[in-house]
Length: 421
Image (tube, rainbow, N blue to C red):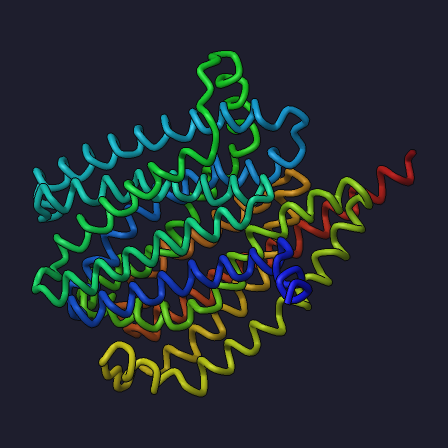
């Protein structure tokens, strides 16, 4: 028994299990919201969550993703993490202020029509998601993955139970669910902060850490904006052209396909740390071979997930969501192909972040975002949801082509420098 526990208590095993909890929790919450709120309100929830996701994308680019690389290299790690903890809380407060003002202005000018409760709830979710992402990433860098696992079990477990209780008592509205989730997340994160460490009030250290992250994340931050556009602009246009219910349908298929995110996000959390060590030990060639090998190993479970999706997808949608997609079931194989393209791009992004050449990621997203802005309205207006799938395919193929070209350019440059030496 002890040997079995030891075998499955490795960082990699715990990391995968933790990501299963996160993806499974999000998946279950999505099922509950779709069933309890209906397609229209679930589509509205999805559109509101894009605001949260936009703030989270910027925060990941500026705070948590650089931490995965910089935190591993730091000799005085405790001082660095204390300063970064302070920076994160300041960033979260600024994000809340910007979100609140932005939504209030949009309501005043009749761009959106949401109550004060919904605006306040979205602000709470912005703050909680930013801090939550930082704490999870910190636990991974500090090799305290069990702490991350406990946080995720507690966070998602309480939310699921609370949403079910709200439904049973007749309180399951969009407004109430958003408020409930915001209160739960902030409360749990307040407790979690006790395990992360004290804040730093040393201005010199805080400014130094901020500058390091600004220097590292310059391209990543711009990329986050473009990534949000490429990933969400088609859904926004779908809401405008096809209605909120269509967004709900897309989200359901996306969630079911999103079981693959268990692998994707686990790769994003685990591989950067190992990649940084491999780069330091064996250089660019060693890093490339490491990522190729890891890509092959992670592809096997991805293939398993895809097979389940294609074979059982229609049954799962009817059973879990109580929704009949009719002619829109073609989206299941469409998303399976899409996530294959997404998977192929993950080792590329990790490579560029490790060698600190994030400009390459930025270039790929510039082209992808440009295509989305130019083509989304036309594709959706003429082809409906088929246009959405095709558009997302093209975005990912553009990204993969740029990654391949930029990777080869870096490798050739490294070989030339070695020959000169």
